[in-house]
Image 1: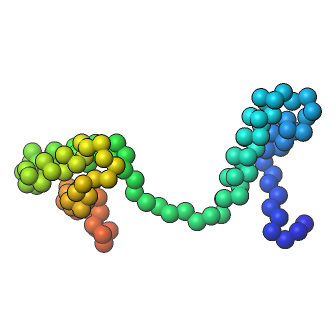
Image 2 (image 1 turned 90 degrees about the horizontal axis):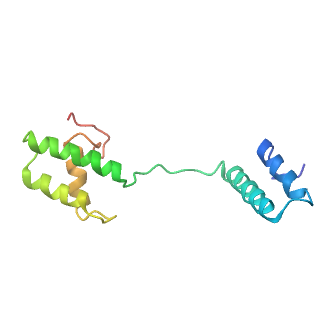
Length: 123
């Protein structure tokens, strides 16, 4: 086998290739099999690529943080102004939080995130 050649042995791929090779395969079934075979090959081709773990902004994460901010605000463990500013940002539609540094500080303070050194403060 030539150097650098990767042989993909996958049962679903073999089935999809059989559909693609069949002259009697209808146009729609051919396109579906081609799409599925392409997806499998793309996965196999990128299997060894390095990945990067990163935080992403999701509605569930915003809700979790907002609940922690509210709880700490009610317990008077963070200042009301700080909590209000954090809640305003969390409630915005913006994908770029206006006071991201402030929110990070609040998240660390309420125990919802780690410090840059990796320390998780007790909530």
